Image (cartoon, rainbow, N blue to C red; front, side, top):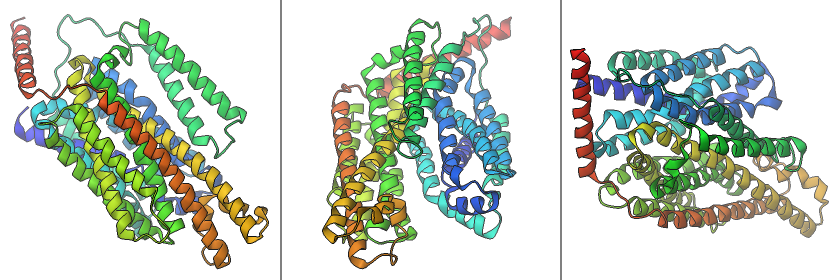
Length: 521
């Protein structure tokens, strides 16, 4: 590929990645207006949940299919599905329609995420891909910072529907550019037709959706012991066991289990799973700490998260240089230690802590999270055969997403349980009936309680919330410690630049020979 087409392709990939990741956050500030126009307040959480379910469940399946049939076709299909889903979301006439169309949007976004980094490694020589990875990771972080702001601006100055319609002109540009600029070699003449593991794909989707849905609905829509949650966990567990059995026998498994025999692959995926727990747990509960505990407003909560996400970008940039000198184990260990220190500090912060102290801690946590992002992608790519690079890369995003959902569910259970106990104890000391304060066991209710209850009661409620959040961050601290242990077991493998340059040259020579053979026929 010539340089001009290469840069056009990279620009289009960045634009597509920005749009798909932006859609996870841009809707948040528009939701009150959407509910006002469409109704369906009781279904509001599904606008986010269905997007997460569909995007996560398709990632490894599409990653494998792109290994078999080529990445361009699945990337373009994913972008087209995403744009169609966006247009349908903007045209929704009810909350039920919006939820269905968000699911379609999520399928497209998952297809894009499954292929973006694999395509990057295909286009850019491995020894030069680090700085481009940092750029792509920065786009992911930037979208989470800008999403709510862009959503608020569009909703205030235009119409909420344009939060979805805005994807069309930008996405069509990306679609046209990639169609023109990206040239992908077809299957070699006489090559056997790939065998698709339909059973494995179906079982993996069923297992993923069932387990994630149970984690999302548990302790929110139903008690953990309620039959819908137990049934979902049971269905997910059975599907997972069946999936593992099928994969052992499949000629071309959707998720090649053999690649997890590599300490680099297994360790990178496990540490990424831990990273997802830490990142999503922090993103959910730091705003609650700032608003509910410290008495800040929405702007203060955003100002606490912004340094974290910007430092994720800095951490990703740093790691592109670290991998030149350190092993995957050392880089992953550094990530877990920094992130672990960040979540540990959160267990010690009192009610009257300065906001800049919180921001500095978020920088520490963000750098720790950011360091791992390019490391994990590069480590698994270099550790597997070329024919498995798509599925290996897609499972990095898959495990990060699953870890985030699991971590959020556990954090919510811990915080809500300790919040309930703390308020019960505080009500007893103040001589108040516990049932009068029952509503405040929901942290979201507490955010709007300032000035609505007497000052001593408000102080007690804030203290209960902060203590509960401290306990939740102890869970994250222990999780980070587990991540440290996992990183230490990853072995001494590192990026061998000379070997990868040699392998790339050998592959180029083989491709040239194959092209000559085709021309001679």
